[in-house]
Length: 431
Image (cartoon, rainbow, N blue to C red; front, side, top):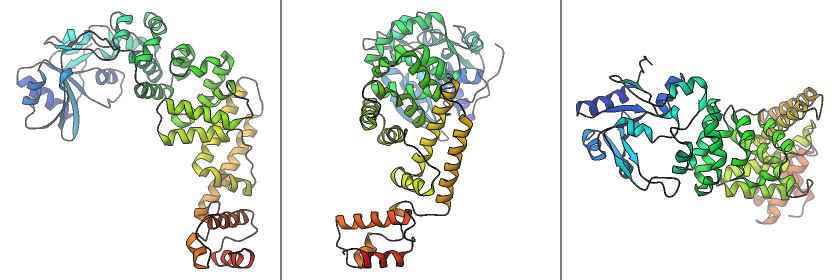
């Protein structure tokens, strides 16, 4: 393939320094793939015949970080740009299905490319030699397929996380998985049991945000079951309904997760016991090591997913008080996605009327927020300090009074005016 890659100045500087010191060096892996795909690389990785100590010596005038000397990687910082520079290497035995027990450094770029996961990631480039593509990575990019370098079973047994990486690349790049590689993924799915939950979660998140997530999750349900065994109890229709509803959400991890896990509880506990269903989903998310905020937001959407939302302004304010503006709008988006899915499968009709109703609700929410109307204690014209100043003792009573005032304001029995609220407390409540 005769073409020239334009690299950032910092990358060219690094390659020139290594070349002038007598070492071979190339950009490699994902950055080469992304450029061929007409994309812009997020990271620039360099591989070289220089040993780690030699890399450090070459860049003695720059800041370096000994990222992983055992595996040949040094991070070099040029103009605040971090470049990972790794020595050509041959991997030893993988006893833990994750990392090689040892690495053998080599001065042969072909040996380094041979150890890599997929053909689309096994390409290297520099200005002098051009593109080095020993495993037809460009062909597979043009075919839009994910294919292992060499023997697929061997590649996956070296690193079990590659199973999910294959699914993730297929989803994000909108590729298919080559038949031999696909069969190997199904055959070796249990290797994921040896991989840390954190690493699995990272790949899963990227997978479900990819454009081709529907086909990948549908075709590789058995692989996903390894770390989310609860979906095993979903029948084919239930599972596909979940995936179709996720199709109506774009690049929102929390919403995608909420829709993915929404139906799981139905197979474990009674449908009407929403609190138990929500607790089940919480436990799954915590097991998958999601952060506290994500767990809270996903479980909130599921908890209130079946709540009837009204265009009544008072009802909207009461709901806003409980879950807040952001989660209120997220629930609306989840409901709309679910309804579109139901329409696509013939379960319901008139989805446009449904959506129009929620657009009205969203309009009222925006209006309430914009006009700073009172719907929670933060927007109430009095606070605990105000009550203390009129003699209310600190403690439980303060909260009870404030919440009572909030209810009266939301119901429009009282105006959200500080003087009037204080007067009401003095005249109507025991303080």
